[in-house]
Image 1 (cartoon, helix red, strand yellow):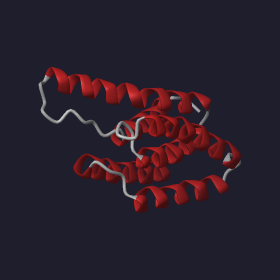
Image 2 (cartoon, rainbow, N blue to C red):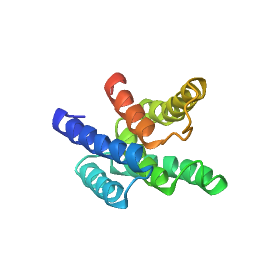
Image 3 (cartoon, rainbow, N blue to C red):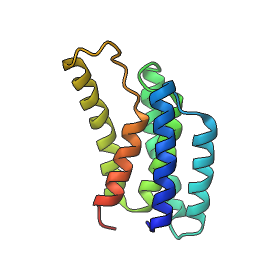
Image 4 (cartoon, rainbow, N blue to C red):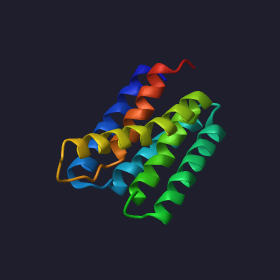
Amino acid sequence: MDLPSFTILTAWCAALCWFDLRHRRLPNALTGYGAAAVLGYALGTTRFTVAVAGGVVLAAAYLSVHLYAPAALGAGDVKLAAVLGAVAAMHGARVWTWSALLAPVVTAAVGVALLFARHTDRTVPHGPAMCLATLVALVTMPP
């Protein structure tokens, strides 16, 4: 991923993380515009089909969790999974796999840390972990 695209993705993720941490939700406007931008970017590459497939597969996994336990994972997380799944898939199967696996691990680790710290609010928004996992995978995994 080129530096300007990565910078825009990072800024978008930062806005989503701030909103999710502050309001415990991911706004449709941010996820929707992000999806449009990612699909537009993918159209300009040879990886459009891969991006759509990666987004659909990750969103389907998140949707199944959301339908089983709606309080555990919100619909915004499902939409964000579609976008970040598309971004990760455009950069290869390793990036997609690591970003998909790292996000729940980060959220679980934060949850366990809150338990040990006896923090009263034990809910952990998952959006920041999804963004962090994708950005880390993009930076650390070779193309």
